[in-house]
Image 1 (tube, rainbow, N blue to C red):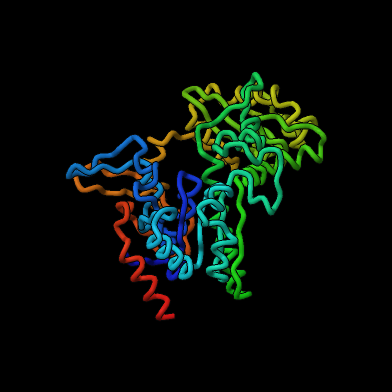
Image 2: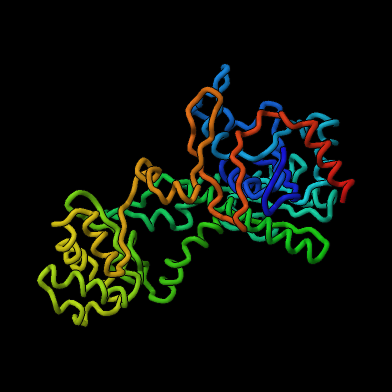
Amino acid sequence: MTTAGSLDGVRVLCVDNYLAGNYGAMLLALHGADVVKVETPSGEAMRRSRPLVPAGDDQTWSHFALRMMRGKRSISLDLDGSKDDRSAFEELVGLADVFWTNLRPRSARRRRVDAQTLTALNPRLVYVSVTGFGLPENGEGEFSDVPAFDILVQGLAGMLDRNADEYGRPAYNGLPIADQVTSTYAAFGALVGLRQRDSTGVGCVVDVPMFDSMVALNEKAISMFGMQGAVPPPRLSATTAPFGLYRAADGWVCIAVGSDGVWRRFCQVVGPLIGLPELERDESYLVGTDRVRRRDELGDLVERFTLPRTAKEVVDLLLANEVPAGLPLEVDRLLETDQVKQRGIVRSLDLAHGPAIPVVMSPVTVGGAPQRVDLPPVLDADHDQVLNDWRECQRSR
């Protein structure tokens, strides 16, 4: 496989599974890295995850493989039971720039793919570990033995409470934020590690826990709690209002008054329309944190403006007066927008005889370099080619 992009020439060896393991490595592949996925002889379990998508000639792909294994190569090795496979694996470790895994620390040690073992084989290796709660040598807490599933980690890090409903019940929005954000941080960590390796000549261990990643994502609520001594209200900005979803005549509209200056512009256009031409000078609303404290009455005031109008009318009027506003779009409408089509963030993956599948690309564009749109690899399809290519690359360096 020919790679192209900013990471051309970077060799990444993966022993990974599930979303947190696959997503960040795929991002590296989309930007040109040669990402080789080491699988067991039966293949990663997520290859069989339903729904399955027909691809013609009695072939099917799992939705997961189509989404998360694109741009990679596959080699099947029995690391625990075959001396020849273990020897091939250790040869690849010696040729790799990055080793990427999301195995739990105990599993990594048991399978001899832990940092101590692999960096002894290749002192220049950047070892990237994606775990639920981090490598023990960097600190352990009371959550270390909790199973690291996305919703559980979001809950422990306070993210579900940020989305609590009006009865105070924590809520999950259905998106695997902990898995994907952590894996994205890990891709960033891999690049930081490579930069350090290039400066020092010595590899390093990159430790990226899901829990720490979600705490980092929850930083505003944490900081505001420390500054104000109170937990910020869920589903709302802690520093400004109106900043959320409001009812219109035909649906919902998102309004983002992000500063006191924007509030003044909001008042100038909305005040006269709701019979409050002096709204801009009402001192009780001048400061964002005061508006947050009066959010209920402010919400009623905003909906005096939005309810008689369609969502599009509200958005058009506010945008014309430099007040940020927009429509909350579900995926069917999202995919029809020119913004998605022109940016190329969603591309079409064409199967031989099946439907064209929309797949999401990396949101990062570097120097206009194109990203590959590939089918995922068939299990072990690249076994001999990977070994030959990596040996040849090493000889040419």
